[in-house]
Image (cartoon, rainbow over all chains, first blue to last red; front, side, top):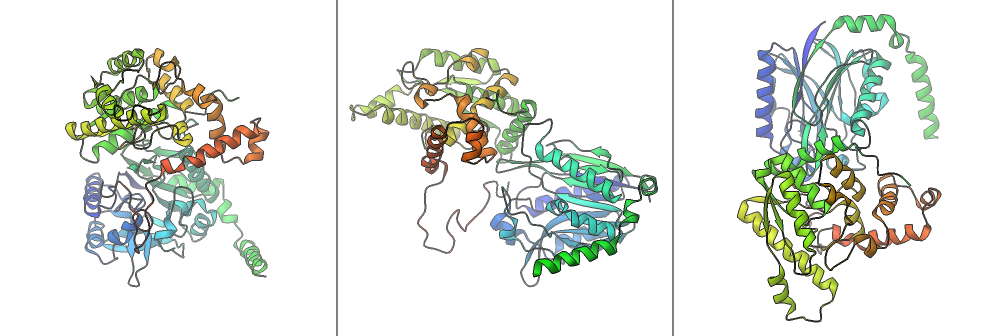
Length: 282
Length: 274
C-alpha cells in the first residue's frame, strides 16, 4: 500500500534520554500533524552514540515509562526508534523497536556490533541473534541497525522472510574527505541502492547528525525505491525532516520487471550454506 | 610526488565550520579565543571560527616576543582584519625575560618551550575572562612529528585542524581566502630570526605529508612505501619521530591501583551530557 514516512534526521544529546525523548516527541507530533503514517529515528536516537560507560546508565527496560510513552504515541503513527535496552539478566543491547497501535510490534537487537577503527560496540553491548520480518499495517517490514546492513545475509534473510520494506536506523560517522562527498556517505549510498536493487525491496535509511567528541554523523537519510533509485535524500551534516511518499506501484512494477527475488532458490542457498558450515566445522 | 592530498575543500570547510559551531554551542558558550601568530595554521582556524560563530565572537590574540619577526605581527593583524575578528596584541617579553633572568644560560629549546607555555596561560586566562573556548591550531603533520610544545601550543579545548596535514591546511586556506602572503610564506615557529620549519625539520612538508598520508592513513607497510619511491631511511626516521613523540599525544600516565582508573576502565566521551 501507499504510505508516507518521515525520516527524522535528529541530533541526539549524548546520554540525555529525557532531552532526546522530548525531541522525539516533538518530531512525532509534527509528523502526526502532517498525517504521516510512519516515522523513523536514527540508531540510538534516545541516547546518542559514543556512550561507552554510560551504557548501563541510559539503558531502558521494555516496560520503562519512556518506552510506554512511545507506545502510547504509536496509537496515531507507526514509530521505529533506537535505544539501549536492558534485559532482566542485565544484558545491554543496541536495540530498535517498531511500535504501532500502542504496542511493540517488533524488537530488533543489533546483531553486528562493529568493534574496529573508531567503533567499540562489542566492548559495551551484547549481540542480538536474529533477523525476522514482521507484519505492520503498512506491509511486511524488516529492521536493521547500521552495521547490520553491511552484512548481505541480514538484508537477504529479511527479504526472504517476506519483508518488502527494509528500515535501517543508523549512526554513521562521516569520514574520508577526498571525494565528491564523504567516503562514508558514498559507500552507504551504494549499499542502500544495491541492496534495494538486489532484493527488490524499498529501503528507508535514517541517519543522525551532530558531533560527538569531534566525530561527525553525516545524515543523508534516504528513501530508496525497489529499483535502487534514491527518491528522497536528506541534507548532509544538518538536521532534517524528510517526508517520503512510499509508492506501492513502484514495488509492484519492480517485482514484475525484475523478479530476481521470486527466482531466488532458497533450496540451493541452504544446501550450499549447510555444506559450508559442515566443512568449516571439520 | 602527489600534488597535494586528495581533499574536497568545500566539504572540509563545511565540516570544520559545523564542528566549531556545534562543539562551542553545546557547552553553552558563544565565543572562542585563539592565538594568532601570523602563520597559516592559526590564520585558517581564525577564518573557520569566524564563519562558524560570527567574527564578533572570535577573539584573536597575537603574543610576540622581542625576537619575533615584526612581519609576523603585521600578518596576524592582516588576517584579523581580513576575517573581521577581534584582535589584541599582548607581548610576552616581560614575563619570559623575568623568568630567564634567573636562568640566563637556558638554551633555545627551553626558551621556545617557555614562550609557547606563556602564550598558553594567556589564552586560558582569556578563556575565563571572555567565557570563550580556546581553539587549537596544531595540524596533523606537526602533531604526528611531535613538532610542538606539550602544554604549550599543543594545549586547547577544541582543535579544528588537528586531522589536516600541512598540505591540506594550504589547500583549505586557498578555498577560505586566507590572505595570499600568509599562504605563500615559509612556515616558521618564529623563535629566532630566519628560522624556518622545513630547515629545522630537514625535509619539506609536502614530502613528509606524502609519507605520513600513505603510512598513517592508508596503512602502507615499509615495503609498500619503498615501492612508491620513498627512501627507507626517511621512512625509518619519520617512524621513530612518531613513536618517540607519542607521549605528547596522550594524557599523563596514571598508576593503576583501583578497579576503575580514569581513561582505562572509566571511559566516557568528553561530550558526555552534551
